Image (tube, rainbow, N blue to C red; front, side, top):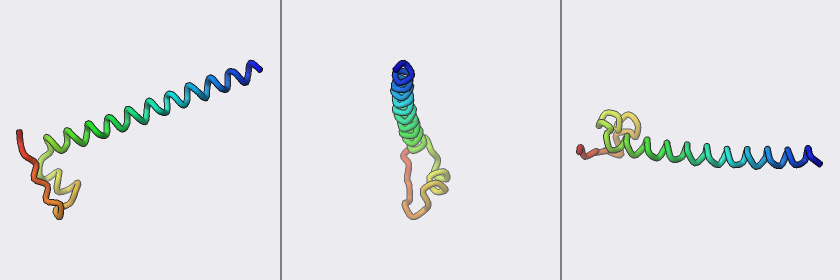
Length: 60
């Protein structure tokens, strides 16, 4: 019975950690994309998104 409790606790911890890491990764990706779009150079925009999109990033 005690082993079962340990397993359920471990499962709960793993689930929490997984949710936390996925959220943090999503947040980091979102923030990174935002800052890259805001501060990124035109060359970076061309290499990343390709020229057909024609990214014009306003400076400031």
